[in-house]
Image (cartoon, rainbow, N blue to C red; front, side, top):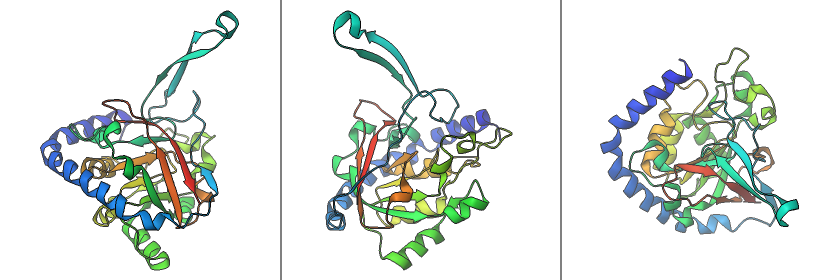
Length: 271
């Protein structure tokens, strides 16, 4: 399916689901905030090492539509004024960034309304890099979540689940976004996994690729189900391969502009 067709299909889906998700978003946000408070004991294991999970954001960083996500204009010149200042034009969903519920729901929470307590979470990392080596559009599915639980124990309520697909190694290449013939190709979450994680009371999901959904998704099924439930997502997470499967705490420095559907964020983990 062409990029424009995908976007048009998403618009139609969002409108048809508006009334369905309005109530779910409000109740979901309250439940997630409560889960975040109960998750505090799971965040006490960190030893103090900080891992920066944020890419440097410039005009060359890959974006979904291929256009630069940031533009600079000199507002104050140092030689003339003794200080310097840029005027920035930024696309919300570019660089390492957060997806707020409002991104895929007409009346969902904007980024400034996300409860602060849900932005500090126990972090669980699920590794699907072996699958992604053979399939550029590999998806983290329910069986991957179940395998993680079998190996590591229960996922805490209010946690953030990060996907490690190994895709960060491609970030400086065209393959981070698409195949040589221009088709989207990158790993993401499968709806079977996010439905299960929602039942577990997870607050957020994070991908080390360009999107929460795999590149070949025809309908953004994860965006359309996860975000309207009052949960948030993170895309383009860096250095995920430096994190343990469990025991770290993630700090999501979400932007706080009114009516925001998301935005570039500084994401840190304490390990």
